[in-house]
Image 1 (cartoon, one colour):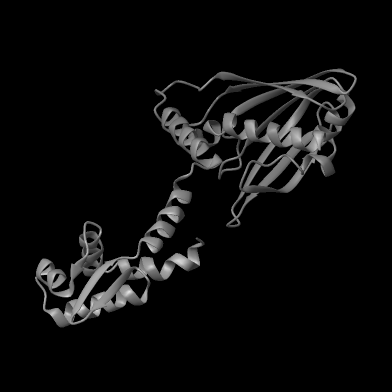
Image 2 (cartoon, helix red, strand yellow):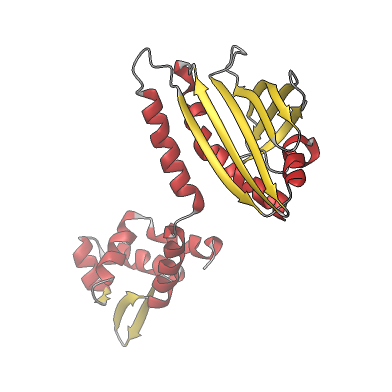
Amino acid sequence: MEAPQVQPQLATIAEPTRFRIVQLLSTRACTVGEVAEHLGALQPQTTKHLQALEAAGVIRVHRLGRRRVARLDRGTMSALSEFFGGLASPAGDDTVLDEYEAAIVRETARPVGDDGARTLEFDRQLAATVSDVWRAWTDPERAVRWWAPQHFEVDAWELDPRAGGAIRFVLREGAGATYASTGVVDEVEPGARLVFRLAPVGADGLPLFAARHTVTLTGSGETTALRLRIDVSDVRSEAAPAVAGLEPGWTQLLDALRLTVEG
């Protein structure tokens, strides 16, 4: 059942007295008088609540001569259960967000004087030629297709694939916030090796940390082995979210790279 179809039932059940009625009727069918007694309310007030629940399809009221017996509409309950069961199914973002938040907590807890130095390494086997993978890293039209984690898009991307060349890219979030990173290319071996320094900048325009990226490509025919090594140091105190996002961020980027070069 889609959300618009369950909204009337949820809005009706959300009223506290009606919620109590639903709880009561979940155990057994009751007459109007029994419901009123359970609530400690007058029968006319109870009748109005039962009418609202019936109109929304939450309960059924059986008119048995002079008696009125209410019970849950099990079909509606089944549809609500299916709807919420769907919401309970894990999504891909769940684990990523949990791990990212935990990483930020660990970064924030670093002792004073710890510059956060560490090395991250990523390996991918790609079903694409070395030249295709190299172009994906160095050609702006190709790079913008994959150089953005989930929920972001590339707002600007510049990389001059020469030693001393500048790097700059800007990510834009859905709400419009932007995040800039800048750096410089250190080494270039076309089709084999690309080394660059790149890091996000803070509000003061200075890098939040130092990060030297080494991309190595080795290939055989239509297959390329990619290794990315990131040496991190000089992590500023306010850089916890940014540096904690390196591992999940680059994992997503390299997955997107695979789709780009293999698609």
